Image (cartoon, rainbow, N blue to C red; front, side, top):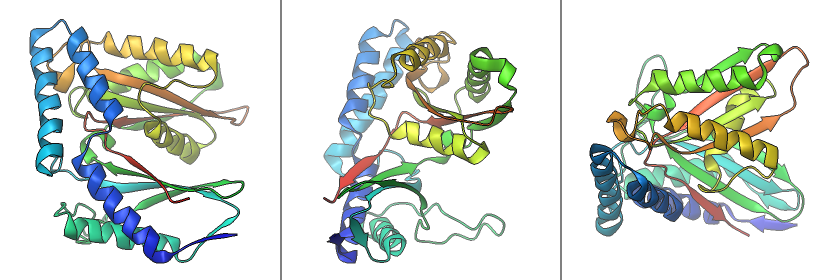
Length: 278
């Protein structure tokens, strides 16, 4: 049995969240550069150039990529042979310290009173239990502009892939420039209402440039990606061929009478960090 100390989790989360807010993952920067080279619309190309420059300035100067430093979403991947005391408390303490020491905006509030918690906590925490000695914290500062455009639908099984595709495309069209494209689009299919929503979120944690391990699902990802980009919304809604940098699908078995589907958007400031503490 491996034991991870409370203090180790706090320090790792603090450092990780600050880093995520200041530094765009390399694969996202590379995807933006590739989009810039492929983009034919001059205005869209100019917007992509600004986004790339913004990421470079943020990393160089140590300032947030975006003023919305997000509501923290944490995916805990923990092996059965790992013990951590007061894990949620440690995660939230690390996030509170990140907010203070990193001078990050506190954006979390009570839903009805709208009273700010002033700590950017509590985090939204998901758990994935694994075998053996594994302990990873996937952390995402999730901006509200993209989150607000997300949708869930309970489709009829008879609608199938055609209905899923129509729902995703219509959701992207309605969102327009609001989620700050170019986007990463997570699509959860199956399970139940809450399960498909969590699958869509999990899909956003996948490495950009990767495709689903199932080749048939990979084909559907590419098909949907192509149709999304054909909408012509483009970077920040100014037109062009780069509406999305990727579409990621995640699936789970569902009831014979149900077909839940969720679409979760991530903006061009696709911030995340993976902390491996073992």
